[in-house]
Each structure stands twice: as C-alpha cells, then as structure tokens.
Length: 156
Image 1 (cartoon, rainbow, N blue to C red):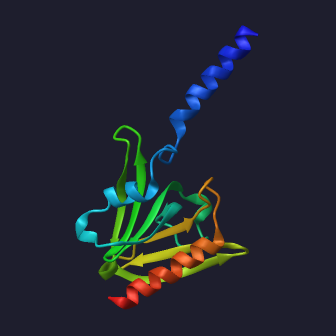
Image 2 (image 1 turned 180 degrees about the horizontal axis):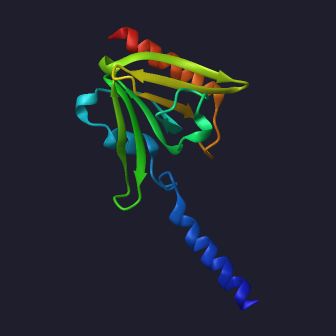
C-alpha cells in the first residue's frame, strides 16, 4: 500500500514537469497580451495551437517536428508563443510580419486543416489551432484563424 501511494505521488509530481501551457490559474488573455510587444499592435486572435516549422501543409508533416503553444494574430503579424516554465510566462518563439508573407493557404487533408505561411524568403510554417483542453487539432478553429489572417493581410 505504501509503495503504491509513493508511486502515485511521484507520478503526479512528475506530470507537472511536462506541461506545455500555462497552469490553470493563469489568465491566457493576460499572458498573451503581456508577451506581445507594444509595437505589434492589438491582439486580434489567439488560441492554443501546434506549429510545424519548415513544413508545407501535410506533404512532409509526418517527418517534421511539431510543437505546442499559442498562435497569436496581431495588427502587424503572426506570433507563435510558448510557455516558459522557468519565467512563468509566454515567450515569442516565432514572429512573421505581414509584410514578409508571400503566400498564405489553408491545407486540407480529410477533416484536418493547417494554415500554411510561405515567407518571402521561401520559408514555410504550418499551424493548426487546437482544442483548449488538449493538443488535438480543431479544423473549425483553424479555418476561422485562416479567414482572420486573410482579413488582416488585406486590411494593411
């Protein structure tokens, strides 16, 4: 009985070491706003997401790294933020200015969707907005994020 309780305690204690998002008490909107530099303008959309660097849609998605974080659309560009456990805040891991975007597309594979951004330097990044409770792609949120991104690009 004592060994079982000890194993359970260790498992629970270690599970807190692998979180990819802020702990529950953190208000996401406040954390996103705090991580967004003032020069980026207002936050227009944010949501939990996966980022696939150097990936063109689903073509080579299985061969590439995928990381979890927050996709943020601002007045000036696309930000991708990750939770920094040591600093207890979101930090910017990727920034793409709208002026640096060459092509934006919505890749589709069955029910799945990915926002694909090709920069003017021909670098590709793919993003999928995910469910708030788990890193599971949400095709409807991703499609809505793509439409918002298009609107922001054409408003410049």
